[in-house]
Image 1 (cartoon, helix red, strand yellow):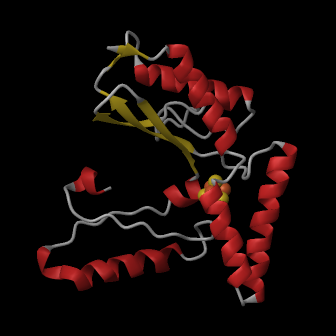
Image 2 (cartoon, rainbow, N blue to C red; image 1 turned 180 degrees about the horizontal axis):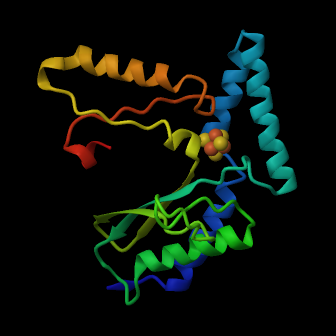
Length: 199
Ligand code: SF4
């Protein structure tokens, strides 16, 4: 059995968050550059220019790409040969807390949707766990902005609605979102499973 130190988890989570709020992944950046290169509509080209300029400013000035530094979503792949003599989720949340406090990032999370009391450190993160073979712990982390999160929706379709019903629901959701989600838009669709599995 192998052990991953609590301190390593905290520092990794903190480091990844501080980096991810101000830097786009290379694949994403390449896609933006490619889109700008090929875009013929002047207004769309100008918006892509602004997004890339924003990225350069965030990088050079060491500030977040957006005022909304999101809710932290964490996907863990946990090697079955690992053991933890501490609470793994708690360690992740300590990393989140340190990143948001020390990095002066916006704290958007409230303790309860109705009492609206801010937790003041952006915890708790939403953490998903999966066990994998081996002795590695893989942490995927994303500060997910509210502009995308707020446009998420779910519908239970009846079998008779079929493929057409599914397409219609996707189209209706995009139309209803209108200009509210932040561009550029990438539509993700999950089908199948039960209520929570599908989402
Ligand atoms: S969804 Fe929009 S407001 Fe939120 S982080 Fe992304 S760009 Fe910023």
